[in-house]
Image (cartoon, rainbow, N blue to C red):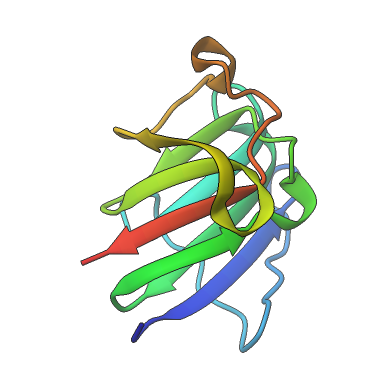
Length: 119
């Protein structure tokens, strides 16, 4: 694993970024490599929690404040699997891309961790 993980939490429009484990990250466009953005409302709305991977590798990421609260997920150029237990254990699902309404696939308010692989 050669990458760095940056995490931001945004509540509503124009919210401030909060860094976890390092300097404040630049907010990235949804198309940035290694980006996973979870939202507590369908359609990518409401409170969000974004994980940005700088580099390559496979990482298991906790969801922090959106644990079991995500209703939509936006992905960039990465392979992503979601799990219903912490530590990337339990029932899991590989996502083919962004999902604007996790309820339509039975995963609304269910995700506890995310495994992201960036080439």
